[in-house]
Length: 155
Image 1 (cartoon, rainbow, N blue to C red):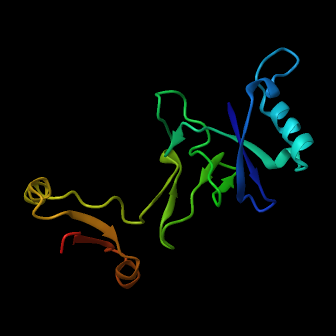
Image 2 (image 1 turned 180 degrees about the horizontal axis):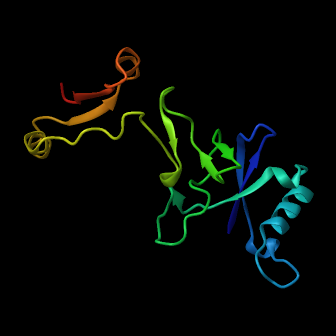
């Protein structure tokens, strides 16, 4: 099955449909996205150029079965199609976060969360604590060298 995202003129994903692969074969018997787009336009009354193929197996710029990643992420309702980078983007999690093209994901402006200490990891394993870092946009806005807060879910 092939998957296609129906997008608005503003590049927002409205829905995702599956299409039988045979419905996207060109005259040479080769799967062709434009053939699928034409099929979807005919059968769904939505312009062909607003149907974009997406891969069910692609997330965060990686193909979960080791194949070639396709368009960054599997499209979801509310995602945005980035035509320039050919990536489906989920909603931006925080105002300060930026696109990381290589991983097709949003990243904090100061990098990844710090690593837990060995002691914190041990406490997580023992179940006495559940330490993790969470993003704090308010902290970042006050001092843009900070933003990751260490929290204990059990506290």
